[in-house]
Image (cartoon, rainbow, N blue to C red):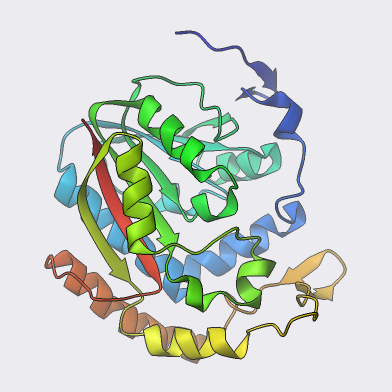
Amino acid sequence: MAFDFNMIEGIKCYAPELALDNSGYHPEALEILAQMEERNFWYRSRNEILKKLFKKHIGEKHTDFLEIGCGNGEVLRALSDLKNMSLTGADIYLSGIKFAKSRLPNVKFVQLDAINIPFKNEFDAIGCFDVLEHIDEDVKVMQELAKALKQNGLLFITVPQYPFLWSEIDEIDRHKRRYTRKEITKKIKGVGLEIIDINCFTFLLFPVMMLSRFLRKRKPGKPASPVIVKKENEPEYPEIDIPDYLNNIFRIFMRADEWLIGKNVKLPFGGSIILIARKI
């Protein structure tokens, strides 16, 4: 099935009316965020966990992979280490896609709206990493992800866990929800996918995360704190940009999560859910 698109600045745009809308994030901060994520303990560990799970569930088989909501391309950069992957990144904003393409010239990129994915039975695997919590119509997106997968294709997703952890950070990050395992399981099964693996991460650091979130609870009637700006057009992200010594300590704890998940240990709790489902 062919889908219509417009070419804008060399990128196939399937939702061109949204391509230049940058209301979802600060486009001038793309490079700042990319540098922070490359060294931040949480992003590094999430990427290592994803690579372990890709090797576990896909192995060495050639795989056409699509990432929905690729942002600045940090996950795709990590997955490019897996030589059996043909990578495609997709996002709604053209500015993010252009920046990701400048970092990853060998990756294919397209612009699209996740509630109307222009592919059917096309990809062996699809990833959607910390994206669903930003979208009102999350079930519609899950239906579209299932549609774009080939038969027996795999869906990899990560989402924030536990509504009781909701804090000012979620509002600053423009989250619509935090998930329970029961909720995400029910929704994934409801679109015809079979869950083959589900786990948590940010396990050993969970007490620290919980304390941090409770301290950032917003009192009723108090507006959320804006993203801090140190200089003109230079936003600061205090949850990502932390002191090096603290980042190194947290990285040690997260390595334990990586090791446990690599040994197929089911972690009892954690700040995030990671789920793999198959199209049946």
